[in-house]
Length: 449
Image 1: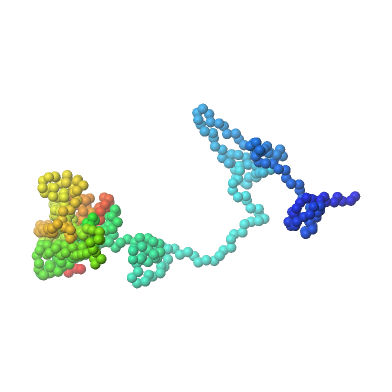
Image 2: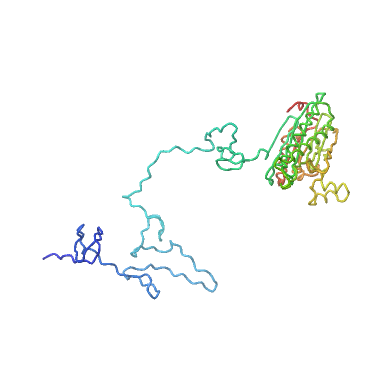
């Protein structure tokens, strides 16, 4: 029996090598492919019919028996949701999908398991240096005079105060300051609301002509509504401190020395208002720098206080059975109302104008009136010199005394830290600066820097 010859095909190209074909070809002239083995083209079964209805699936392929979702009844209870695992899965031929051991029945959405004969090979290990732990890694030593970022500890800080590596803004030096001497300590903090610290302080001690000690603390609060208040407070505190250190060893009475120190501080702040060379009548007006000042000088027998503005000084005795006292009177709107008998203290300080100051250091002040007072305490205690950033949270002397630690005379730095913390815990709405001076001045205070 003769074998049946392949029938010619109407294909235009070889299914195997894509070689062009001619009519009547039974084999591909390029690769010899048997063109009679090409299956007939599949029957066209459109997904959507012309009238918009879906055609029925071929009878040879069984359909999936999807559960019918119940309709919402009169109680408006929604139909239950079916999860994929609730429905029996089938493959494209209608057969049930196999379930690997330990897996629940249902449609699988994960990747099929690889055949055992084709296991996945782990990626080739590429040797690399281990990553350094930034907490223990040895960082490169920065060049001399270069500030190191407090955040990444590796980048240098530019002149604008930002890290050149991570861009982190660096804390300013004056955001938090502490200084401790043997007979006086001070702490200043930016607070929780202000963008910078406009307070400043200076503490020191000197020897009087008879060799006895004189301890000095100056605290200044920059007026925020003025220009460069931070510079004003810094200039005033330094000038007053230097004036006292120059006058006290010469035998000048401490009260007179305090008066002259406040005048020196005023002149230092006034000098900041000098017009720069580029200033002319077309330049916009700016308020002259301004600040308040309160200072204390403690000797073995005498306590001197001086002030301009609303920064304060308090007396807190070591024996808390004795009453504490406020040693200053504010140059403020509220104090004027109380002094004139127009309001009581509670009413005046509840007014929104209460903290408007009527006296300050600066070229725009009406008239400089330094206040000084001399006291001779008959018992030991501490003098607390502070800005309104503290006394806003402990205004009455009795309230402030409750915050001052009992060992303040022995641990003035710790006491100053506690008082600043009290203001921050209370809200920290302003810069806060506190100096604590034990009275009488201890002998070791003489001559300390």
